[in-house]
Image 1 (cartoon, rainbow, N blue to C red):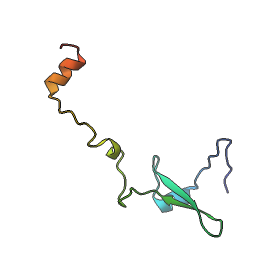
Image 2: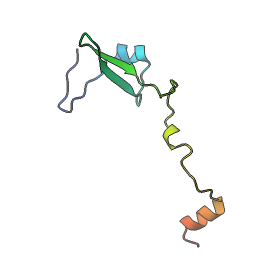
Image 3: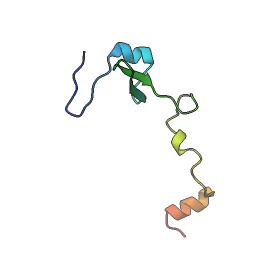
Image 4: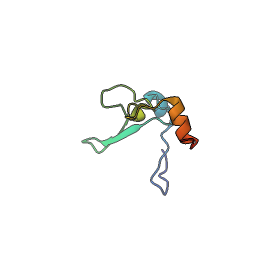
Length: 78
């Protein structure tokens, strides 16, 4: 048994975290089944593989910078 905090948070018991392979920073999803029971699952990326923490930022830059040009810009040398 666990207690709901004022913020609506609960601690997932260790034996459940271990069974699901949850580590700090892991994403989980919650659902309620037809019997009214809460189901906790380890969240997966849409394609079924584990989501990398840098995945959301990959491939976003559209400007190709040369290092010297970028450093000059950052140092206000232009």
